[in-house]
Amino acid sequence: MGGPQGPLSFEVIELVEWYLFKPLGPALFRWKGEYSPQYKGPRVLGLSEPSPLPSTIVGALAALKIVSEGKGFANVRDPLDVLGNGFNIWGPLLYLGNGKIGVHRYPGSIVILNDEAICHDGKYEIKKDNLKNPLELGMIQGRVGVKLDIKGKTAIEGNLYEAAMFDIKKLQRELNKGEQNTSDVGYAINVNVDLNLKTPALIRFGGEGRLALVKKIDGSDLEKFVPKSGEQGLFMLASPALLSAGIFKSLESEMQPKVGDLEIAECKHSAHIGYISTGYDMAKNMRRPLYPALMSGSLLRGKATGTHLDPSGKHHSWGSLVRVIG
Image (tube, rainbow, N blue to C red; front, side, top):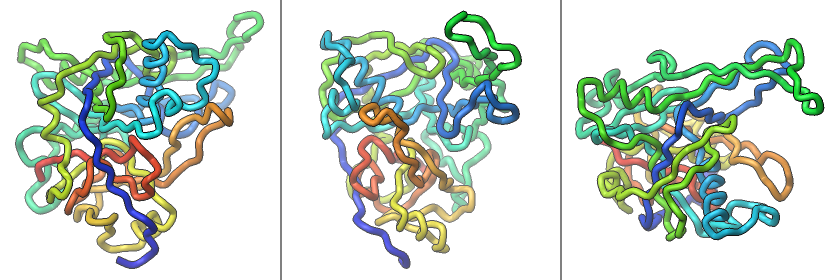
C-alpha cells in the first residue's frame, strides 16, 4: 500500500469485568462542535449521537472509583491517574434486551447485530432491517434550555438553546414489541482490570446533569463479539479509531485502503472518516486535540490481530473491534 503509515498497533486486552451503564432518561452524547445560546442557527442545537465516546466512559469510571475509595477529586488531573496507565476498555455495545445488541454507526445510526449476516451478499452494504435511525424513529427527544444570569439566577432574554437527546429505552421498546422484556438496557463495556467499584451506583452520565446507574454484569453472552487475535473475518468499530496524519492521507488516496492487516470493506458506505476530540485535559484546563478517525460503525475485513485498532499504540480504549457476520 502506498503512502506513509508509521508504526501500527493492534491491542489485545484481557476481559476482566463487564459493566452496564443504564441511563435513567434521555441522554446527550455530543461528539463534536459546540452549541451555545449566544448564537443563532445550528449552533443553538446540541444533537446527541446514540452512544458515548470512550473518553466519556473512562471519565465516569474514574469518578466512580474515586467515590468507591472514599477519596476526593481535588488532586486528580487525569482519569488515568485513578485508573492506571495500562487501563483499557472494550466497547461500548448497546445492550437492548432479549439478546439484541447494537453498534453505533456514525453519524446518528445504529446497527443491530444478530446471528445472521448484516450485509447484502458480497456488497458489504448493511441491510435495512439491521440499520436503525433514532431520529426517524422518534427516539431523539428535544429539551429546551435558557441561558441564566448567574448572579441573579434569571433567564437572559432571547438566549434559548435546544438539546436533542437520545432515549435508548425507546429503542429497546421498539425492538421488543410483542415480546416479554425483563432485560436490562444500556451501554455494555469490558475493562481489563479489577476496578473494585462499589456498584450498583448512580453517576453523572449523558450531559446536562443526567444520571445513569452503573452495575456489574455477567457479560458471557457478549464475549462472542470480541475478536480473537489472528482471527479472519468482518469487523465493525464500536468506537472511533484514532489515526495518524500519514494513515489518514493514505486512506483518502487509496482505492482499497488498509490499516495493517485490515482493509475497509468494498462499499462506499462501509466507512466514515471524520475528526474527533479525545476529551478534556483537566491538567491543562483545555480540550484535547482533534484527531482524524475511522468512526464508529466502519466495516473492516481481514485479520484482526487484537481487540482494538490503535495505529499509534497511544490511544487506549479507542478503536474497539466487534466481530460481525458479513
